Length: 272
Image (tube, rainbow, N blue to C red):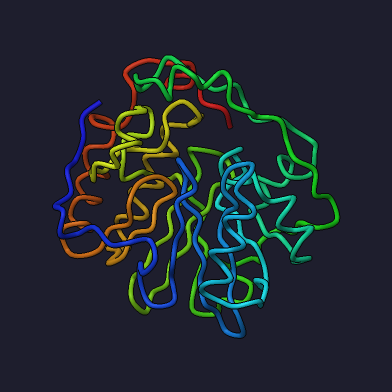
């Protein structure tokens, strides 16, 4: 698959993505924290084994105050790995899109990944990645309707399916800050070398776990129309500036050319 390069000057550090928005890379995936109305919230929960690191990072930014809630863009293993330990430690509620609930309440495993798409070691290893659900019944709730984000009155959630059926992104209209989860990446997530180097370039969602490519394209188009000024991805470095917004528009326009695989398990037979 092709790529859309990003100028180095549009990269921003994870510890200062936008006003009140900070991030932490946990090996191959990012988590983010957002200062809110009366505290802060955590978005996504990284890899298994990263809970201690996340808690220390959070303490550096917010002191001893736990988050008011944990919000999930989706529930793949690399976004919920530390979730059970963080919930036990902090005693806070978790919110997900209704279509992600089965994967965090023990009811349903994700569809099988497709190691044949995208090329690279990360893709070829996909059959080894966990896809069984976690079980937080009684501790997890649906995100409120109409895009309302708990404890973040100036943000909205946006349904961005494709990578998963219940994937969401978060947008702050005041400054056009956008947290995208895995709706798209700023690194080639299928490649181990690209993940290690964190070369700044726009790609579609991680191909090996994406199960509806038409929906994925429509989600990228929806996000590009927002003209984000700050982009906080689940994989890769955050971006900011006019060039980053232009690159996202280019990705949306050329999605089938540069992001959608030519063949694969879900390319012609999406899971819906």
